[in-house]
Amino acid sequence: MSYDHLADRLDALIDDLDEAMFDHLREAAARKELVARDDKHAAAEQRREQIAEAMKRLTSPTESERVEAVEQLGAYPNPQTEATLSQLLAGDSSADVRNAAALSLGSLEAPSTATVSTLLSGLKDQSEDVRFSSLSTLEDFMLSQEEESPLYQSIRTGLQDMGQSTGLPDDLRDSINEVLKDPNSQLAPGNEPAVR
Image (tube, rainbow, N blue to C red; front, side, top):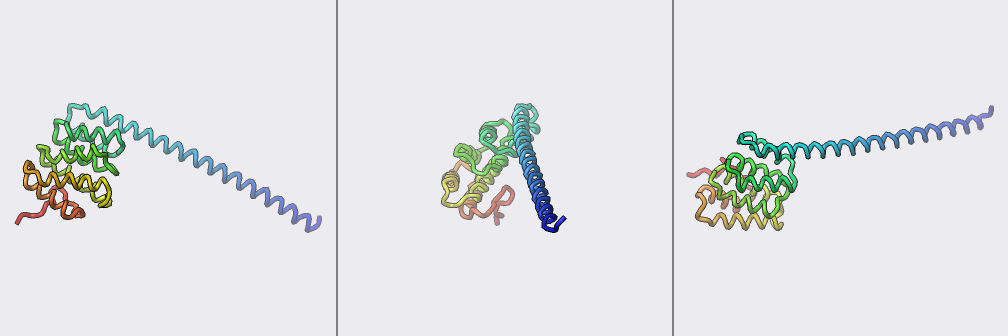
């Protein structure tokens, strides 16, 4: 056998091996893509199940279970959970549930106009915790936006109106005005400026 013939056979063998290796890599990539799709589908299904479970628990007569359900809904921000959390903030009989709803709404990337309105109304809640949680959530939304954005401007205008309201407790009005002075203050309940 000549060396040329061996070289040709070796080249053919290398080509066959290359083709087999690329086929194997293509099949592995296809399997990986299928697994990724299955994982995404499973994760979406799990989210739907978690939301459905939390929605059922919202009807519990036990306040602590309803608070846990609200917190669970906050972990899955979407238009459905946003609407539910807004309704709870606006009208649940329990201050703890309303407070959890105000805080859980903070998980949204950008709230709807209706949610901003509900949070602004939360500033008038009977519960101090709900009032300050509503303010904290609104401030967080402001901090996540450019000052020129419609959402930022909407919240700012709403807070300006509330800051002028004589129907709010002085400490809340002071906190609102502090947020309006410095939107980067991260003023949270318990972190109000010390009165001297």
